[in-house]
Image 1 (cartoon, rainbow, N blue to C red):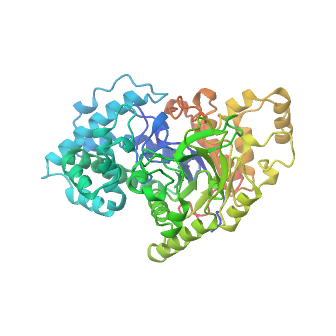
Image 2 (cartoon, rainbow, N blue to C red):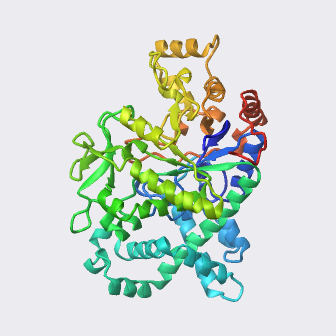
Image 3 (cartoon, rainbow, N blue to C red):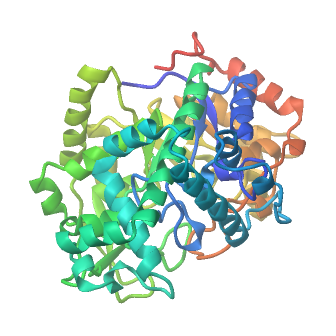
Amino acid sequence: MPFQRHSGILLHPTSLPGPHGSGDLGPSAYYFVDWLVAGSQTLWQVLPLGGIGPGNSPYMSPSAFAGNELLIDLAQLRDAGWLSDADLSSDPAFNDGQVDYPLMQQYRMARLRLAAENFFADSRHNPHEQFTAFCSEARNWLDDYALFMALDKEYGGYGRVWQDWPSPLVHRNPEAMNEAAETLADEYNFWKFCQWCFYSQWARLKEYANNHGVEIIGDMPIFVSAHSADVWANQQLFDLDDKGRPRVVAGVPPDYFSATGQHWGNPLYHWPAHEKEGYRWWIERLRATLALCDIVRIDHFRGFESYWEIPASSETAVDGQWQPGPGAALFNAMQNAMDNRQSQLSDVPRIIAEDLGIITPEVTALRESVGLPGMRILQFAFDGHSDNLYLPHSFETNTVVYTGTHDNDTTCGWWSALAPHEQDYVRRYLAISGEFNEWDLIRVASASVAALAIIPMQDVLGLDSTCRMNFPGHAEGSWGWRFGWHQVAPWHAERLAELTQLYGRVPKRQTDIE
């Protein structure tokens, strides 16, 4: 189903203001929804909501299904009686403008463990029926995830991964797994408790957003982390050796972002095994993602047509080669499953294809054949060539336009890095007679024929390169940016609302986004 004209803001919850070292699902998240409504915005795009991995990346989660326990609002646990005021009164000197991940994780995890201890200790007042119901409903992924995390605590550390665990556990011997679940019962149940808290809090926030006419755009990475419950629990679905280690890994060849390409290190899929089981794992994954959001952006869509295969022993992506992906067969299987689900739940899934990078005619043909909108990034548009597909005059309606994404510099930083002749080209294309600022690009995005226009929060606030979210190809220094409400003036929402109304991106009924 094609999109109507809408606009929204890209902001991951960790970037929200608030106590305890990072943004979370607490009051600031609800206030942000209110701010979106004030600016006539109907979309809130987030990054993957799973737990973080190496380098604090949300794209390297230990599970494709589990939520990030670090997003749990601790104040709600206090209100439930599982933490005290004193437990939350001793915050370290957190940096309000940047997430200090080690300090934040230490603080939050200690309080989550205390809350879980109190929850399980007091069975008289806590809603154990709700917890039990959640565990039953999510058992297809939750049991494996909770055991994986418990085993990782028991056998991990010092760089050890699940392939280094005792052999019976590596190969998932049922007797060994049952024994481990009993021996590590406290840790096993702790991770289930965290997921219940996350899913409960997120459901309330999403309901609040939807009731106020705001829909959530989620993000589903194409690949999963090698050190994840997904790979451990589904080894037959990945290209692994007999010890469970990846033979080949994912990445992309040299491109705009990196001269040596990007060596992501994710294990690659064994696509014949997925096809044999009717793409069951992918269907379950899409359903789980659509339970958390209203629209899903599938990252690295081009990898479904063909993907860059890198030998696991290579340090960079230069030595990789292209391999064919599953193509339309995967999307047809997911669509058929979702159509069946739609008949029961009246829930139409919507997908955005992240079709950036090296895009061939075959990739475009695949996207068009399965009817998905693609993405256009304005920062990529101004290379001096009038046939550049990222220039607004080249857009199609079935498109999502961004000034930039989490992988780009802020528009302020991007502009500062342009050579004088490049800046002149931008001015001439945008018909700017004076000084450039971010709102010139925001206006062009909003005015374009693209059905959806998404603006990073950094661009709304006019922030420079120090506020960039991600530096692709760099292991450290990303994912930490946060804003403060003191940076947000009334005119920001007013200006957004003006552009949204001027260019017809306000829905006829604010609560009916089709």
